[in-house]
Each structure stands twice: as structure tokens, then as C-alpha cells.
Amino acid sequence: MGDILIHLYEWHQLLINWIKSNMKGDKVPFLPKPYTWTSYGEMNVEFWKKHQSTDLESSKDMVSKSHKSVLELIEPFSNEELFTKKFFDWTGTTSLGSYCVSALSSHYDWAIKKLKAHIKNI
Image (cartoon, rainbow, N blue to C red; front, side, top):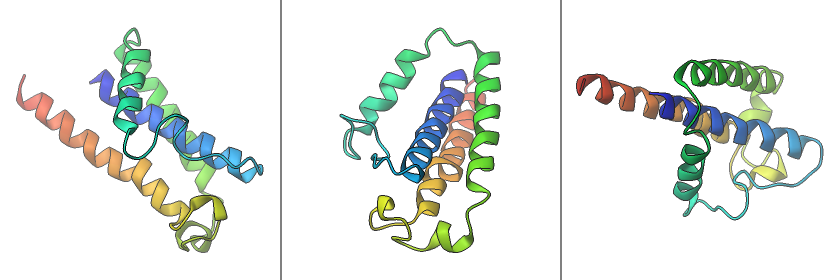
């Protein structure tokens, strides 16, 4: 369970760092180098390795705080800023909201499925 929460936490960090950097004018890609959209699985493995000693309670606390931080960060954006493709040049051909959906609700959906499968196997 902790591994799933840590995965969510790390993807929150990706989104937070990406938005903050680009809003400051530092053009950075969403995925840190050397990762790409075809190799991000390797990045996820690195997240897992990094947190092997992170206990469940810490994982819960981290994901709870990072979720709150992400919501506070994106709340001021208007619907136009969030959902207009290419509104920000640093989102490429898509919208900021699309990245938010990917890092938040789509990942939460994934996490719920993983947790349900885990509970079923207990």
C-alpha cells in the first residue's frame, strides 16, 4: 500500500515542480531527464527504490500533504488557463489541465484499482 501512495506522492512532485518552474520562466519538461514518455516506467522504478525505507504512516502523510499542495497550486488557474490547449507554450500541444488529470485523477483511479486488488488478495 505504501508503494502506491509513494507513487502518487512522486507524481504530485513532478506536477508541482513542473508548474512552478515553468511559471517562473524556467522551461523544463514534465519528466526529468533522462526520462521520456516511453521510458517513464524506469523513473517509477527509481521512485520505488528511493522509498524502500519510507514507512506506511510517512507515505500517508506525504501523499496527503502533496495532494493539498497540488490543489492549492492549481486552484488559482482559470478554466481557460487549465483547459485551453497550448494556452501555455510549455504544455506543448495539450493543456495544463490534461497534465493535472494525468497526475491526479487518472493516477488516483489507478491507485484505487491497485488497492482494491491488494485487498482482494489479503
